[in-house]
Image (cartoon, rainbow, N blue to C red):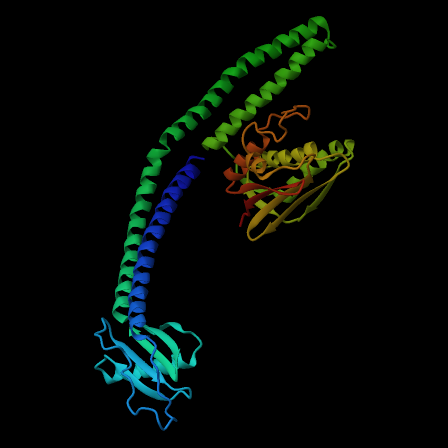
Length: 409
């Protein structure tokens, strides 16, 4: 539990730092990118003023062609060209000194002319296309320097963010131990209290039980009140023993005797022992079990685990229902499943609490069915002690418990 709490704490800190970095760095880079676009669009707007083109087929048309870009000094390299309706170049203007750059811009301009977009990016150039009287104006603005700065900052910010995230992750792992230390100490004290109190309770319970036996010998075995005392004493003794054992298992102090276990036979044996109880309530146990499922584990603990699951299914399924139980091997795991309908549907919150000590889905906490609400906690501790896990899932008013245990090689 404490290990999981530390992991959750560290992950929370790391994910929070990641979210902050993503929002911060993302916002800065988006603003930078928008600035590059804004600067280039301002240049495009200066060069895309309407120009009245002469009709080249008109003999009365003036022989001189208006200057295409307005006569002003652009802040960046610009290429503009005007094409007639047939796609023939009428005039062009460039601030590039390089012939290679001019040829590239001519190729870009022709590609823009044949495209459908009126504004966008082609390569590292921002373009605008405008249909004017007598032709089409294409303007290209060089965004290379701005985009280069943007990309450099983007790479640097990402690397810096990753470095910060690594530092935060290391710090979170280190600090998580101190952060959960009070909880860990409280949890350890709680487990020690349960163990110590359980041992202290055992003695008075034994005395009460012995005194009840003496009373029965004097008053007769059919005395209702003394028999009730013995019954409740047995229940309290059982609860005490279960709590002590559960605490020891969670502390890792339960001595498990690992041997080769035929899980198929063990499950079949436990299911058969509950068939008479199930049939008395008109319930049917349906077992589907492979014959060759073997694991390394403690026989008594595993037998109790299966017993808890089957007993739980029999107790809380409606009369006349079928209870499905299976045992098989899959992907190197031994899988035990119990599936049954419940008297009332469970929501997701209740499913997550089923393995908590003393939790009962019945809000009235009716104890007519027996038990103390720690059976599934014991089953979970047993599964984890064997290197496996147990989960619960629901489908409507049907609940399924799944145990995964490693198969012995």
